[in-house]
Length: 50
View (cartoon, rainbow, N blue to C red):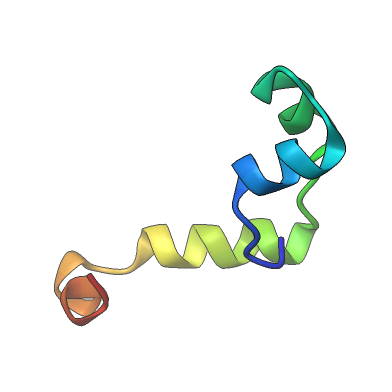
């Protein structure tokens, strides 16, 4: 949730399989809402961020 790459978290946790890392990664409701807001933005609003 703080922006760390999943692969880095996987390595730090010592997980051989990425699926194991993802199983332990949980998003807060606020993080989910933020992702939904990003996805709801018109493409033209995102053009400057790509």
